[in-house]
Length: 145
Image (cartoon, rainbow, N blue to C red; front, side, top):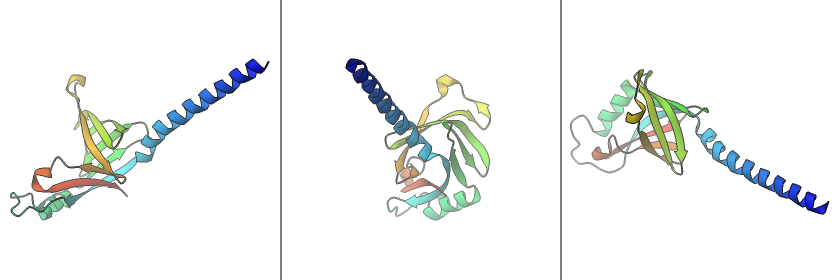
């Protein structure tokens, strides 16, 4: 009888371990859900920015056509510009990175073999895009409001 109790105890311990691991993995993604709004930030000083790419120019573009990323609990996302859905697809978090994979672009399905993950860095609860304006000393930061 003591052997059966020992096996039952191990079974409970394994169940609890699996539960904690699964809850931890899925909980991280749930904490990311919400709508994130774009802002522009300088990352380095640029003495002569390219025409149309100064901090003021890009801020004006974002003011005219605001961008947002909505991360949903079902691992789906939408990227919107000026209220229009540009990308729709799936998202995942891996370490300090968020990956977005567009399945449709402006309502047009993207063939699976052409789909690719777009990587964003996660920083203090914000989504950071350093690629688009990085050559101009700027980065787009999406923050939840």
